[in-house]
Image (cartoon, rainbow, N blue to C red; front, side, top):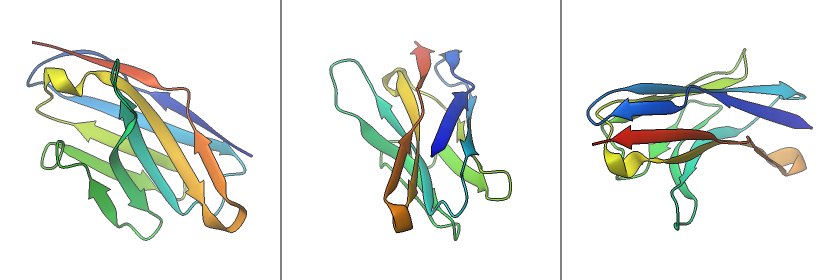
Length: 117
């Protein structure tokens, strides 16, 4: 199995920056896609950004141009750089990993990001 551990959440003022990191351990070989999801109070979990093992990334429209996802396949880590954050970015952010050949679908425990206005 694969375990995902997030770090970097916290309190930040609107307009500021925050960097989230996620490290995969266990048997993290050949992960096809890693990403970040978020869930705000009373809302459904939504995709923020994801990146494939070939480096292709996609973003939610709400964060496009502000957030950047990157990965280090050798270290099995994925990072979300959050710039120009807004109060509506407040949520619990979850790291996610997929491996297609064995239907791996792993989640981290989540890290809280709070953006104050």
